[in-house]
Length: 254
Image 1 (cartoon, rainbow, N blue to C red):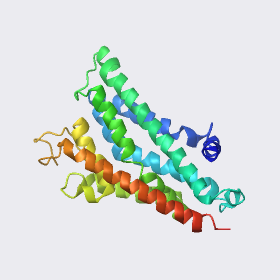
Image 2: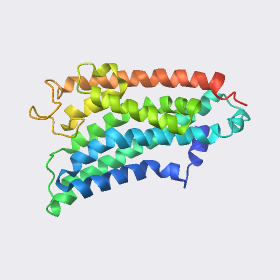
Image 3: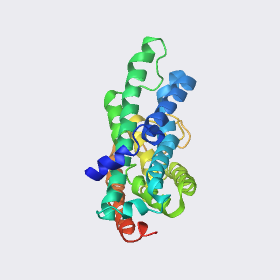
Image 4: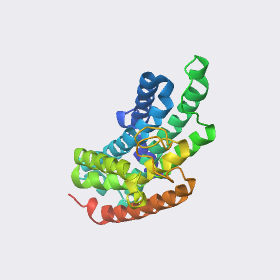
């Protein structure tokens, strides 16, 4: 916990510490400003397809880059196990992911259900508070595994290659989400699970038979539990593997 608090203090009053808020706020402003009556549809689609993976990748890279720039000399001098330092970095990134989705849920609830309809801009997509809460929870849980993955990738390659690779793989997941093999690609699980939760396809269209890329069974809620369990398994595996790597090799770059 002390290491987590120390790691968290590094980003207080910095751009990195505000990144989760800025990315979500930008998504909301663009979605509701441009789409207006279709704002909640765009807010969710743009967030989980592009802005969320971008925020997670960039935030975790910035967290890892502080020590990486100094070849981890600062952390090597600490009288603690290197694995615990890795844990602190992951926990700080989890906090940012949680608050980003929490802020998005509250903002979408207020804007789409109360504020905009009050000024005669009703939303075409009807969504309940329960759906908003479920979407926030699923977006958080199914994205957790990308945190240790991006932290490890950043230690190996740096920020720009990590950002490019993870965004490309997320794009592949968007394409694969509407296929029967979506569970085999961890990047495809989030866009797949959002469909039965809020009724939006990865291409932004409503999940109805007339929409392009709609496939029978894509709105089946029975896919949610397997998808969540698979991503949690990936999270545990990647956290453990990357922690071991950092403990043995990642911090020994002096």
